[in-house]
Every structure is written in structure tokens, then in C-alpha cells.
Image (cartoon, rainbow, N blue to C red):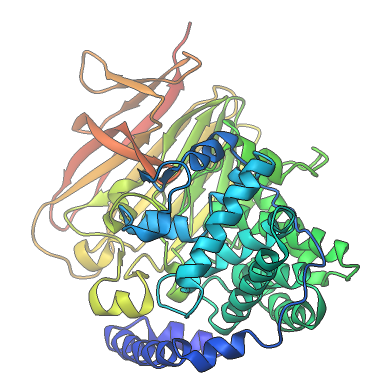
Length: 568
């Protein structure tokens, strides 16, 4: 109830300012206490007593990254530095904040462990080096929920292999470090990521032996069981609406399920239900190229990752066509597969990575991903502006936006939540032997232009063509008396080549399979423009096809387009 109240309060500018002020005061007060010697002493009591389980990290490691780390070469979140073999990455400034987040999360640790004993010894050296410098006091960045949650998870999964190459004193230090960090994690759960927080703490509880492990489990498991039904919707989507975040939580819960089995503990019913739902959603969000659709602050991930997450699937599960609770539609043809965002972005603390890109879609043709979104994620080496409509394969109007991230004082306190986005999104779907028809209307542009955007899509089952129409109609609310420009964007995957036809009105798209596709339209202007698509936080240059036109004041406009295969 308190979370609902704060989300409602945060909708208005005055409410956000009040919440931000309260949050900052709370943060400053807690940081003063947490940085005290007394608090750090209490975190260490009772003392940890060794290890009881070895949780398995189910994400496939990358030995190439591990060998680079072994040589002192760290390339994280799109940037990097070198320390040389045996160097200390903790005593120098990071090239970017995203790099520092990844470094302090120990994201390199699973890759090092893939190298065997040599990698484990280097991992132990780095972990103890971190503890020497940052483990003595609870400080703001290294101990922040954003960083700590993943570090606890990675350290818990690596603990058994690290202690196997450690001396007794080093093993004692490592176990104590895991215990202390897991306890603090439970004292500072991150809003919008409570399921991930309690999962990491519960995995640490499974890992640690004695009263420390039991107390962590006693605190974490009931809280996890209570928050899972709230964070995971009935169709398997997360409340954040990020497909990638759902895949990552699926991995974490699978690790916890295995760790509880190792401890001989019965898993909560909510855990098994969550794993089933997330697995079904991962199948739903996977397109023909074997990767996820990139929506709402998530990237596409890799085929290896998705295959690993669904390794226990029997193959009998078929993707459903509509995820009614998380608000996505899937249109399936013979070669074409389309995922469409047909709901409003998340609100409140769930919207920290949300994007204002209503009615955006991604499309694959066989194994070729053709049309994508920008795939901005919280670790992307790119600004928050890439969360706006222009970075999605959807329409934008004028110079405004259909939602924007918080900035300044409010963002410092509450995070870069998305505000003022579309709130009323309506979708209608019909299926028949002829194909699938979908209509989406939203009010994201009403405040600035007075116009309703309606996107109509029809996937023809016989011709395997996708036909679309984007219409802009007056909402009845008062709008400005100026002409409004519109742009309809089709961002292309970096591996897709695009060229305009001689008439400068149609675009030819060709993916890695060399199958060509025509994007025809009746817009007044068609251009090919630069774009960017993120993979593993790094920007890749690509192209976008942009249809442009103008809407006279008080009137409406529409643009029709069609994607069809080039006949051989």
C-alpha cells in the first residue's frame, strides 16, 4: 500500500519534489549511520562459519574475457583500461561510471573462473584487493544497491571455487566479506528491483553455513516470496516491462532453486511459479534470430544466453500471441515475426529504465533481424535521450516527447524515472486465416500536440507481408495553431544494408541471409539517416529509414507502408 501511495504521489511535479526531498534526507541519514564503525561492526556479527553450498551461475561464461582479465585488460560497458598482469584495478579512476559499476559488480569473475585454477587464483586476488580498500566501511558507491546486488550474487556463486585456492586466513576473509555484504543488501533493497535483491541475498544464505546462512534465508526467502507475484505479472512479463530484465531474473531464480536443493530446503511455491512464467515469457519475446526483442530499457541479449536460460525447456512450449498483462503482441507469419509494444511504460520506481516509445516494434525475417529499437539499457554508453521516441521504431511528433526521464535534483533522489509518458494505450487484435490485424492508439502526444497516434498493423498470412498505417488525428483537446511535423522511424539492425530506390520513395532492406525486402510507403519524404543500436552496452552504428510529413493545424494525417519480400 505504501508503494502504491508513493507511485501515485510521484505522478505530479509537486509530489515528486516532496518524495525526492524525503528520499534525499533518508539517504543522507542512513549513509551517516552506515558509514559508522558501529554499523560495520554489527554487520560482522555473528561471524560467518564457512560454506554450505556452491550455487551455480547458469549464464555461460566467456573465456576470452577471462583471459583478458587475467592479463590485466578490462573492457566493460563499452570502455576499458589496462593494469597489466597482476595489476590493481581498484587504485585508479574508472573511464566511465558504467565501467565502474560493472567492475565493482564483479562481472568479470565468472569469466575468470572459466579458466580453471589460474583464473580462480586471480579472482581471489582481485576480490581480496577490493576488500582491502572498500570492505572496511560501507561507502556510497561500492556499497550502493545498484552495485551490491550483483556483487553478492557473483561472489556467492564463486565462493566455493575461490576458497579452494585460498589459504585458511584468505578463505575466512572471503566468507566474512560475503556475509557482511549480503546482510547490508537486505538492509538497503533497491526500489523496483526487490525481487533481484532478495534473490541475491537468499543465494548468499544458501552459500553460507551456520547461523549466518540460516538468518539470511529466514529474512530473504519470505520477502522474496511476497514480492515475486508483484514483480512478475501473470503472463511472465516483469512490471518494468523489460524482456531482458525478465531473462536475467529467470537466471537468478534458477540459481536459487538449485542452491536450495543443495541445502535440502524446500523452495517457496512462488519460486517455481515465477520460473515457469518467466520461461514462457522468454520464449514469447524471442524472435526468429534467436534473440530477444529490445524494449523498455533492455537489450536483445545473445543466442547463447537465451538457449542457456531455456535449456530445461522440452521444446513443446509455443510462443503465445498476446501478453495481456505486460502489454506486448506477437504477430507470426511464415518468415516474418513481429513484436509490438502495446501498453504504457512502467510507472514510479519500476520506470527507472522505461522508454517513451509507444507502439514501437521489432521485426525478424527468418534468422535475419531487420527492424529494431535503439536497445538502450542502464549500462549503455549513451545518454538518457535514447529512451525517447526517436530511438524506437515508432512515430514521433514535433520537437516534443512522449515521456522523458527525470533529471537534476529529482533524478538524484528518485532515479531517472520516466515521467509524462503515454497513459492511455488501447489495443485491439483480430486473428483469422487471412492473418493478424492489430490496432494501437495512445495519448502520448496529446499534451504537446493535441493529436492521437494510431498504428495499424496487418500481417498477411498468405503473402507474408506486413502492412502498416500510422494515423494522427485530433483528440479534441486544444492544441497549438501550428503545423506539426511527424516522423515514422524504422531503425535497422546493424547487419542490415539499406538503399533507396530510384524514385526515392521505397527502401530496399537486405539482412545477412541476402534475402531482400522492400519497404514501400506513401509518405511525402523518405530518407536514410544514421542511427545507433546497443549491444552489451556498446553502441553500434546503423541506419534508419525515416518517413516524414506534416499535419496541418486542426487536421489529421496518415502514412501507409508495406514490407514485402523481393521476388527472386
